[in-house]
Length: 411
Image 1: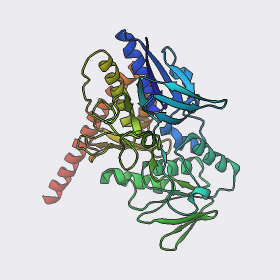
Image 2: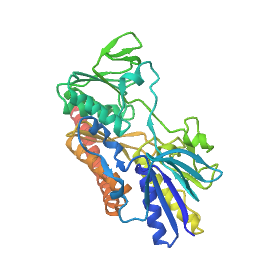
Image 3: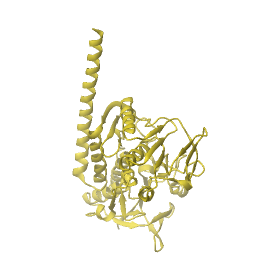
Image 4: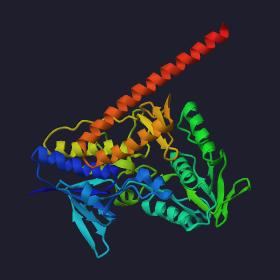
């Protein structure tokens, strides 16, 4: 009898897990039946949603095409509950509500925008955390009448939204508001380039400021200052669905499921959790940040563990580590910030058109890996190695130039 595996969520982590389970099961003659449950019939490239918000028609791919050539069965519907005792998942569709039984469950429902903790944000601010939200921003811009844009949040998402819209809609005056400094995870060299890009695109920046209220005409800061805006986009923070906590999985204070080194729930051995919904440990023991960069290896790691255990093997705990952070600064500029395995910024950076091209390749490769393109995954790793070598050479040349300048000045 086939072993029923249900994967919840077809984002990067869920799609990668479903496809690899199917692939490995075939290769090792394991009888499985894999069902992939997703709220829509499309795979959404979430890392392109800032492009969608600016009006580009990108980032949406039919899920059926992403599963072509596999035995994975797609199931479109909203997951409403998980019964860990009976091993059943309740799924609501447009037509009815049904239950899916499982022997092994892979929870990959990801994250969404955290609720904004200030009055008026829910009513008046938009978000780019979902396809619907990004399309709503694009529709608002297309209507006309938006002359002033306020983007709240100085992380990479906020930067990408502000710069993408500023470049695509030069008649819109964009302003970026952040509680601390912009792009706190970047080295001084990367931050300097980022600040130049904001200035070039006409994006005003307010650092070390907090929003107290959002209304129909803009935002009010905690110091009483008003920032007028026809459109407010909120990009501060993400949260996970409450399903894991409600079902009874062991979760942390943020609702992310505790997992071991194979992505297996520490409380329920027939459940694996991957992507943003998992509390995975980085090399230094800290919780891994929510990202497609971590979601993809988590999905593959869980798939390996599932098939290994079904065939009597002890799965290896895959090590995770960071390589870089990448940010688009419009279509023709970008920043690749190399980081340590524990996500601390290095002095190595790539900028400009080269970085923009690399970011585009990385985004395309992420979908290639999730959808099972082995050649794309191998090519992606090759590009990472070349990027690392190129950045190291640039850093060495820059250091040599600085040393030479100091020597000349000393003489």
